[in-house]
Image (cartoon, rainbow, N blue to C red; front, side, top):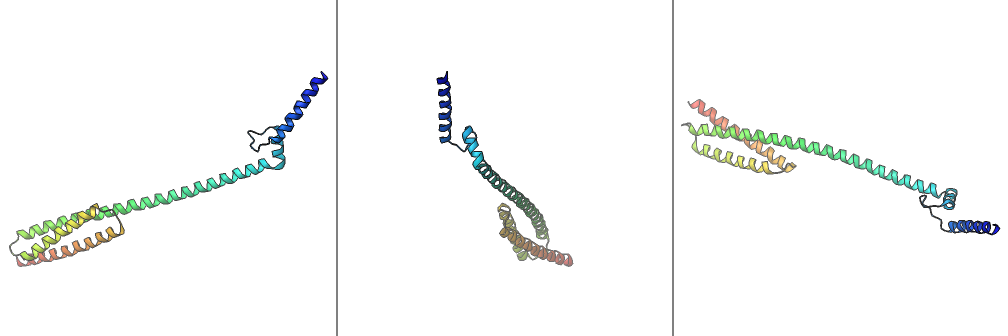
Length: 173
């Protein structure tokens, strides 16, 4: 029996000695000896601090991504608004050009009208209509906005000329 106790004590001593040699810092794999040593020398605390730092970095990155997402949402909303405004301007131009085409057709039926000027205005309104069509298919941009503004100015100028012709025609009749 004494011999058996000696073997058991020797085995335990050998296991502790071998366990001390095979130290691991991973708490899920550390044995009793490694766990005690890791607690005493601060390995577990260092590991926890490292994990907290990683967590803090990830949280900061998540916050930055959330802020960027909000910024992109605001930009998207502004683009939608800009696009809607451009579409409204396009629709207004469509109506104005159609009105001027109808007014020119009315002038064409009149007897006392300058046919050369009427032909030039008809050509001009056709050109403006083509420009409008081209702008409808172009994506909204500062350049297309400038072209749209110029087209509006050209339509306004044409309207003034047609108004003058109609006024002169009414005066003659």
